[in-house]
Image (cartoon, rainbow over all chains, first blue to last red):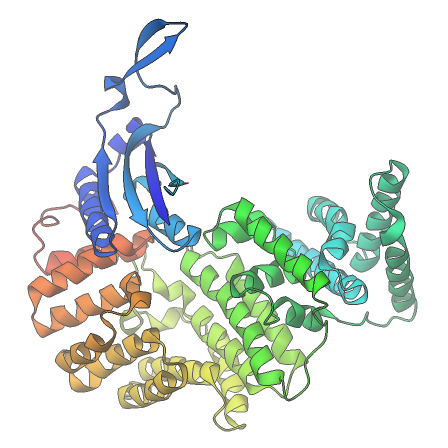
Length: 112
Length: 421
């Protein structure tokens, strides 16, 4: 089963981490992920750089900032193909960001 | 006893009572889910009230009385049907009689465990089911321990209970001819609970490990003729005896060959040794006996200074041929390195390097890294240690690997200051 692992961060909490150590952990995590056939993901710029767009009754609204106004914001994702939910959760637990935010484990709709 | 310990003692007694009563009811109704429903609220009330109000003189009677009252409430409101009532009544009179005669209630927890670990129940549900029914641990806590979402854990448990009811899975201790296989399933489930607790180990604390040991001693006491039950208990006690030595003052992981033996729990080690000796009197028995013997040799080696590595390798030889497990091959290779050097061990690891079960297994990469480091293959060591670090979820283990990588001159890690730890 394919999963998209959505990384949500509290940018302030992340900033307090030892940065060198954090990125070394991330490098190790990405290497382990690659070995297991996962695809290392995408890191987004801070949520403050986001623009949100919606169309209502034909009128387009453009808003500064991310879609959801929560403390932890979408910060990136990675993909993994594993046999079970448990394995997907284990990968979420290994992700260094889990220690500073939340990893949302989402199974991907299989195309028929 | 501090308040935390007092709370735990109360919880332990509440759980023990709960498990015993669920087992009594379930064995009678052959329906685990309804037995739990009947007692669930009473158990929750006990966990809430006992720590502050003190233990009731007869915990079993207290629980049954609250369950009866609650059941009557629900009957009046039409939220449940009559059918549970007679069973509760029967249980109540049984408890009453037992306390009047100052006798003990019959203990049906072992038959309940055999039902929960029946071959018809999916493997992944057995340990959780035992923990929920016999120990009264919540589905939510079990789910986190087994890295499953609470929703799917609940589903798994509900499915298993429905299966027990519909397939008429027997609530009994199996006959001799069936015993070895059936007992193995119960022991495996108990060990799964223990090793889950062992891995979790936040700041030396674990909720599941003591519960699993308690289950292990329940089984070993009830089945004194079964050497493997003793061996499993011994194995868990050996591991538990070293729990506090696994971390140094900074919380960093310490491998067994560097642990401070003064912080080992000698009472537990003695208990484990006695169990292992009792088990050995039956001759060669099985997997848990071999694993307990390996633990015993590791400990003897540290305590006496004798070289036990050849004996450990020989024990692993038996374990590999008995279980055919890649983990046994891995551990054998690590022991072999101490007898024949890292290159001999690395050659053995080639046999499992493409095994699917091992590529995501953190200890494999950690061992591969350490062996390569010793053999002077710095590049291979770095790669394996990096993957091991990426796979580990425990800060202490990660820190240990970071230091090893640093000593291998890892370019990313060079220059990181650890002074804050």
